[in-house]
Length: 110
Length: 162
Image (cartoon, rainbow over the protein chains, first blue to last red):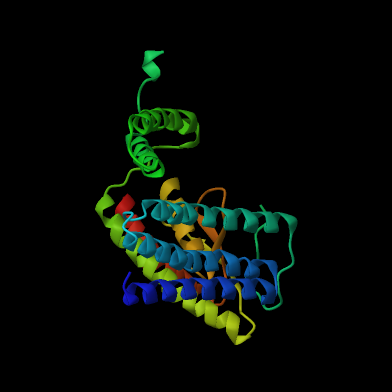
């Protein structure tokens, strides 16, 4: 494996790790349930994306073929993440979770 | 018995078959047979959940749309990361988004796109499927969010599905 490949993999892993960390910080720091919903769902998109890309690059240069499994992981993740966020938001509205001060607009009551 | 040996959703069956081949480590006789069984069985079991067959009239526009969404995810992730790290209090907005799309499948794709792009989560769709409730993490007003989503995502989807 050339030095360039190693640097690429390292950079991708660091970017992925950084975004996952920021997502976790967001989960701890943001004021109410609805804003906290944004932290983790979003961190997964880019954080996991970058880490999986690093895995694709690594295994391609190991000579084991391009990792189709990783692409499938990404696809499944992108299919399921919005649904879990949606269900959690619906559950929160159903329970009437408090909204932070300064929020414009209202959640529905259906 | 033989009248059930059909494929009500050919594209779903093809997708399931191909995905199964990828999931199996290498293509073998067993994985081909199992793929065929799954490609037949899953559409049969889920048939009741599909309200109508989704009609894509311009499927070749899909890759371009996906690329745009991917690019937006990267840009918007950085914006949200900066907001979280800056320590500023976000200004969240609940947006009632008037839908122009009518097909359930198209609405699902739009709602998923909104949830995947950072800063917005689609929370609910009204019972008559005309309004989408979106929670925005940080926006100055409702109209700005509606315009952005309308131009970037709903227009391309309208062209694809109409």
